[in-house]
Amino acid sequence: MNDTPRYRTVAGCALLLASLGAGAAACGGTDSGKLSTHPYDAADQVSFGTAGHDKKPVALNKPLEITAKDGDGRITDVTAVDTAGHHLAGELAADGLRWHSTAPLTAGTRYTVRVATENDDGKPGGRTLTFDTAPPPSSKQLKVTFGPESGEYGVGEPITAKLSAPVKSQAARAVVERSLKVTSVPATEGSWYWVDSTHLHYRPQQYWPSHASIRATSNLGGVKVEGKLYGAASKPLSITTGERLIAVTDAAEHRMKVYRDGKEINDLPVTTGKPGFETRDGIKVVLEKQSFVQMKSSTVGIAAGSSDSYDLPVHWATRVTWSGEYVHAAPWSVGSQGAANVSHGCVGMSTDDAEWFFDTVRPGDIVQVVNSGGDEMEPFGNGFGDWNLDWKKWQKGSAIQGGGSATGDKSAVNSSQNVVQASRLRPAV
Image (cartoon, rainbow, N blue to C red; front, side, top):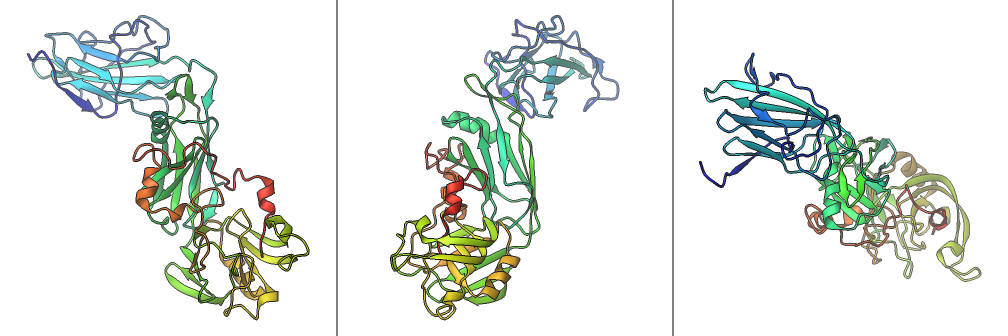
């Protein structure tokens, strides 16, 4: 026998029991599973250490191990699943005499371990063990709140995750990120981005498919993040998307073209920001809709009494940034719409066109501005500018695929879930 056994990974398991000084509540029995119809009881062939002899929960600071008695067959497979259905990863030695865990145990749960064996004659056997794990060593738990609220959104709506405590190290962020799952039907490739130490955004490489079903879940409950910080159970989120609606404003042409599932459905004359107040270029996402907003220049730093001051009632206002950029009715500038840019940063249009746009779009729909000469839309902090990062840059914000975040620990998020009231009061016509 080779003195240095090679290891092969076994999908879905990780328990180290023979080396445990503390035991676990256990119950033995046969397991059919993938074995033959009548596998023999391998109770005398495999060792779980003191498990089964002690009712104490298994400690979290030690790996779990299962061993086969030398000269009495070998272990062929091991699976370990907790009460939430999460599999624990592990490795089986090439000689089949030892299996051990390669991932931390989840705290405060019960595992069911199924061991498949065979004797020297090749006859299959099996053994099942259940045990409880110790609770988290501290009351400090990391909770995850997903956003947005359940409902139907446009194809540009990102999934957000707000953490109840900061997570700063890349290793700890990787633990969190691996526990946060986003699935969609139809399936899409996507990734998390660490905006800061308490906020993550998730988006696909391209926009979500039309009429998709999207679900975000956390498997963080009981998982050790770092130190004495363990994950807590979190409420899952389900949303859907509608049709793919994208509005593109060409500030140089003074036109907005609206597309539904790739087909142009309207071409509207508009006005955008004048020199000194240029509308931001780039991709934005509809944040909310307000049928009436009183827009005051003082909220965006324009002194009362100046030539640029205003205090106007505005109808059919579709918001795209928290700093006050809207698509809205601007009856006072109808003569310039389609011909010149005269606004203070918003996209203005006729009352009828603004009402049509208001009724057509939903939160999550895409509003893009090109050729404005203004600043680029920020990726974070002023709405959802996530789509202004190309896919390679986006992946660098993942703790698993990249460095964990390009924005470090600075608080960069001001999403619809945590925006302060003051930022809601900064409209610009």
